[in-house]
Image 1 (tube, rainbow, N blue to C red):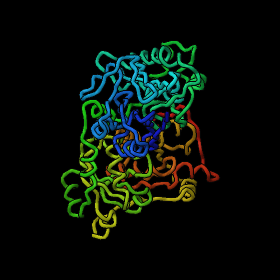
Image 2 (cartoon, rainbow, N blue to C red):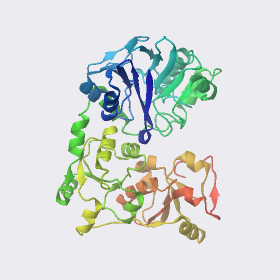
Image 3 (cartoon, helix red, strand yellow):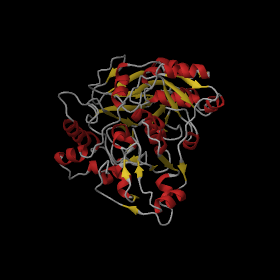
Image 4 (cartoon, rainbow, N blue to C red):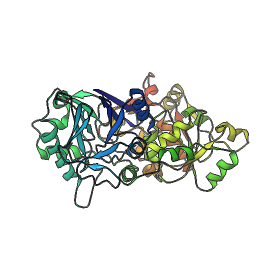
Length: 469
C-alpha cells in the first residue's frame, strides 16, 4: 500500500493518490489529468475509483476528465445527487482497492454531501482518514458554502459538530489525518501550515475538537468572524456538480499566440488584459487598463477573488515559457475563456510604440525618509489580522480582498504610499486603482516586511481597527 499526498501550494489544496496490488484510487484531484496519468503509468496500476469528498467551491476538480481518460468510477458520499455517471455511496459503504479498503463516513456540515474516507489496510486496521473540508489541521470547514433556503449556516455548523464527534473523534488517536487544504485556503479560518498529522494531536490542539465544547459554543465559534467567501466559489461548485469543458479544449484555446493586432482586437471586443509578470516588471511599464496578478504569487486565488465575471474572455501577457502554466492555473478555478497571449509579451507592445503606463515605486528607505518628512498618507492592503498585529502609524487599512467594494472610498487626487506584506498584493491593488483613475499612488517595494526592518519607522498595533479605518 502506498499513499501519496499531491499538494498544490497556489491553491493550498491536497489531492491523494493511493495504490495497492495493481489498483489505484485518487481523492479530490485537480482539474489537469497529467499528474495522475503519469503516476499510473509509472506504477503500472489501473485507476479504479475517483473519490470526491464534496462539491468543491474553491477549485474545479478533475473527476470528469480523469474518469473519461481512465474508465475509473467517480464516487461521492450520500446526498450528493450527481448529474453525471457516478456512485452516490451509502454511509459506511466499503470500496476495495487491491488489498485495502476505503470506507465512506458521511460527515455533513461543510456541505450536506461532505464525506470523509477511512482507509483500512490489508488487515482491516484503521490507518488514515481523508477528511476533505470536514477537518483541517487546526480548524474545520466553513459552514456557509452550501446554503439552501431551508438550511442555514448555523444548521450546517450543528451538523458538523455532530459529524466530528460521532464519526471522527471516535476513531483511534493514532490514525493519520490527511486534510483537503492547508494554510492559505479560504475554506477555513485558522488552517495550519502543516498538511499531515495524527488525530490525537488534533484532539489536543484543534479548537473545534475540544471535548468540553457544547454544540452551542461550537456553532458560535465557527460562525463568528467568517469573512465572505470569494465571489467565484458558487461558480466552481456549479461546475463540479453539473459539468465543465474538457481541460484539453480549454488549454488548446488558451495557448494561442496572438499577434499585436489580434490581441488588440480581442481587447476591443471586451477581453480583459491580464498581466502575469513580476511586480517590478509591471510597475516599470505595462499596457494601460491591464490587471496585474503575477503568476509567482497566489495567482489562482486572486484571479477568483478579483475577476468578477468568470466568463469574460482573458487575453494575457506573460514571460516567455510561462503561458501553459497560466492557462492551466486559470482553468483550475474555472476561468476557461482565455483567448490567448500576446506573442513576444510586453516587449511586443512596447516596440510597436503603443501607449505604456508605469507606477512610481520606491525603496523602503526612501519611504522612511519621505514618511519622516511628513508624507504620512499610507494605504495598507494586507488582511485585517496582519494589520492588527503591527502596521505603519496612522496607516489606513484597505484589504485587497475588499478592494473592489472599497475603492470608491479613496480620494483619487490625494497622494499616498501603498504597501502589502512583501510587494505582491500592493501591485495588484495599484493596477485596480489605476483603472479607476488614481494617478498619485506610489508603491513601496518589499512591503511591510522590508519597512519594519528599518530603524525609526513609526509602527503601531491596533486590535480594534475597522476595515476602512
